[in-house]
Length: 276
Ligand SMILES: [Zn+2]
Image (cartoon, rainbow, N blue to C red):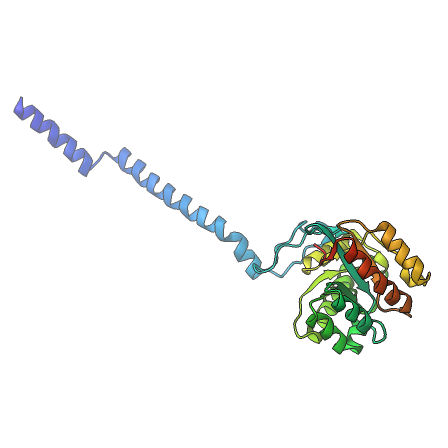
């Protein structure tokens, strides 16, 4: 019995050390298969990065670009939607001034805002900012926010080619940054409010909220100070974004209207906030 067990053990031991050919081949094929599988997984995992690095840079057409594009980590992702009202606690209202800066009216509006402790957003035209850099710096220094309103106030920008649109947006944003020694340009507003989906998307991609409005007293048509004041007072509500103009023509009526509107808003519990 002992001899038989010993013999069986010897046979088993021999088969482990020197297995029959069929098992040797099976083992070898298993090892080769595993190695090939792992290699394939590693190559597939690396393939996209390798192709991007080696191939030409392909820019996505605007129409197929992702809806929300991540920006650098320190800046929040911008939603590609048109902002026509603002958030904020209580009776918040966002005051916005377009087409400046203008040496006649912008300083007076800044004085009034300072007097009432209110902040506003200035949608500046690039060529105006270039002509009056001191006013851009004053706007920033007094706590107001810059908004990109293109270089030339081209109302057709929304239907230009993606390339032209992109150059306009970035050139005017960079100009405002340069003139203000690096201030953030958080918003973009289309001239005359002529938006297109592509323009809103590109604005978000470039890190600027597309800034619309919900209260427009048409101050640029020069309807008279009383009309401007009345239209704002009748239409403003908590969360409104009010469109006014500090440039683009004679703005004495707007300045006079702002002089009446700021105390009126304060008396009714409104606080002026930046659009969000
Ligand atoms: Zn404008």
